[in-house]
Amino acid sequence: MATAIARGLIANGTDPSVITMVDPNLDQRTLLQDTLGVTVSEDAASACKEASTILLAVKPQVVEAVAEQIKLAGDLSDKLLISIAAGITLEALEHLFGAIAIARAMPNTPALLGLGATGLFVNAYTTTAQQAEAEGFIEAFGICVTVEREELLDAVTAVSGSGPAFYFLMIEEMIKAGIKLGLSPNDVRNLTLQTALGAATMAAQGDVEPDELRQRVTSPNGTTHAAITAMQENGYGEIIEKAMIACRDRAIQLGKV
Ligand SMILES: NC(=O)c1ccc[n+]([C@@H]2O[C@H](COP(=O)([O-])OP(=O)(O)OC[C@H]3O[C@@H](n4cnc5c(N)ncnc54)[C@H](OP(=O)(O)O)[C@@H]3O)[C@@H](O)[C@H]2O)c1
Image 1 (cartoon, rainbow, N blue to C red):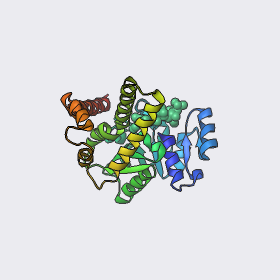
Image 2: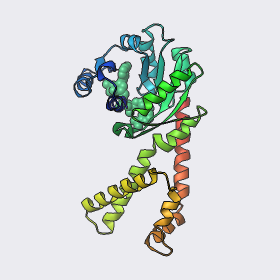
Image 3: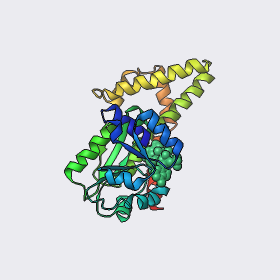
Image 4: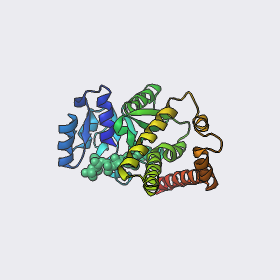
């Protein structure tokens, strides 16, 4: 995720040399330096001492250890910390870092292409200017939706954080079914992917709602109508809702361990 975010920032005009990426692995640091032109370091404390914005992009289970390293930088009170660690609450982050400006973000992997969808919530120590800075940072790799309550980040996880996988599953299942209907794997793959891209692009234009777009291609008793009826009779809507509730509940559970 950190690499995706750095790529987005650079593509959006940030000078790579002002970004310092900290990674314990030498091969990874060399790769980041060579491919992105960023400054690299193995020392989180010295990198964070120099930085005005710190992005915490490690697995939740190493957040505590990394916080100990970052705190060796000394006074963090004028810094903005942006955490993307899933499930780590602002309360837990404030416990680790103290009363500083912290923004919690839930991004997703299309950030790699500058097409990320990220939910954001900031703590009470964050100024309006720092919130705008966090939003601008996130908008370098996609859209930013600032939510009204921290717990809504768990709903964001169910919509966009994990959402790309729901679409990948739909694509996988359409490819499998298309092959069963006699198409070659290559043909069905090309047709499915272009259809997903076309449908998402039409829906993203936003001037016509998705249900209206669907109805426009669903003539009574036609082919699409047969498909949609089969989906609805088999509980398509309920499956999506149950999946998203399970996702939200797992996010809540992970935040408690
Ligand atoms: N992937 C997603 O779709 C997604 C979506 C939303 C949020 N998130 C959150 O984003 C965070 C990062 O996820 P990810 O998938 O990018 O994980 P990742 O691929 O494991 O990246 C974490 C990076 O942190 C490095 N690291 C480990 N210990 C470190 C330390 N002490 N100091 C500095 N760097 C250290 C790791 O290096 P090594 O590989 O050498 O250990 C690795 O390069 C997670 O908290 C996850 O919950 C991910």
